[in-house]
Length: 40
Image (cartoon, rainbow, N blue to C red):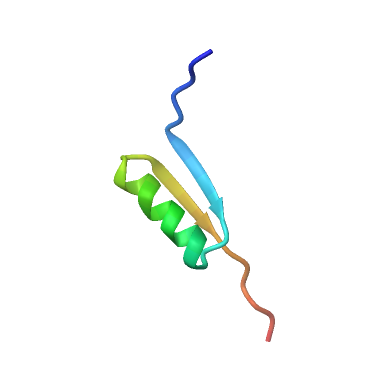
């Protein structure tokens, strides 16, 4: 079964997460990058 993925979500915007999101955006995927806001 072949599925075309058009949208992705990446959890965590550290070095690894932002790199993954960047690569996916470069191949014309819609990317949602999510990270937690630290408490103060």
